Amino acid sequence: MLVAPSVLSADFGRLNEEILAICETGCDYIHVDVMDGHFVPNMTLGPVVVQSIAKLATKPLDIHLMVDNNNFFIDLFAPLKPEIISFHLESERHPHRLIQKIKSLGIKAGIVLNPHTSEQSLKYLLQDLDLVLLMSVNPGFGGQRFIKNVLQKAKNLKELEKIQGAKCLIEVDGGVNESNINNLKEAGVDIVVAGTYVFSSGDYKKAVNSLK
Image 1 (spheres, rainbow, N blue to C red):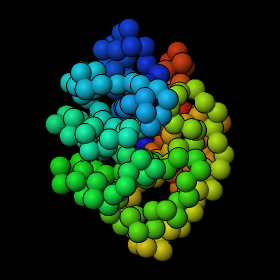
Image 2 (image 1 turned 90 degrees about the vertical axis):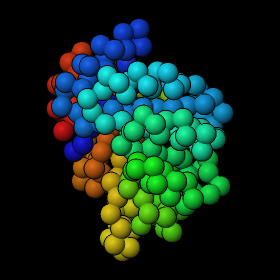
Image 3 (image 1 turned 135 degrees about the horizontal axis):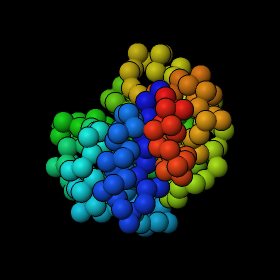
């Protein structure tokens, strides 16, 4: 299992220390949640903070956009050379065009599905994607309870991949911990995002290892 700790749950009063510490755990990505206060009822990280994270991080950035104006934010963050940029299907009128734009910048393209959005909505996009991020909480805030329906959605998505011959990573974000990690693995999930579970653990390395 690949693990992407979410810096949304870090202590922003000592962010430099937090980034260095989390990179030393053996995690695989640093998950960066970008919220604009419009698509979701919260605001988080701007370009100055994300630039600081990118300079310090020894792990690749996995940027998750929860915004209305995807093009604007992609242009803002692309120069930081993240490995992945994901945007919400629900926020974009022309998702295929946006996928191609992200990939043309040398960045892996992902689409995010809210808990209520069916995996079938990706039927005509799946072969162009590098990653699908399934939300297992409602986006906007950390510390929420895991929505179990995502397990079946992940299984359905895996089956859809096989039918189409598509190859993309499946990521799950929200409420991930040691009690559901085995179920996520059995459902075919490749990457888990963990914020509260890791940063509230008191032992980052132990928490990451328990998921891996």
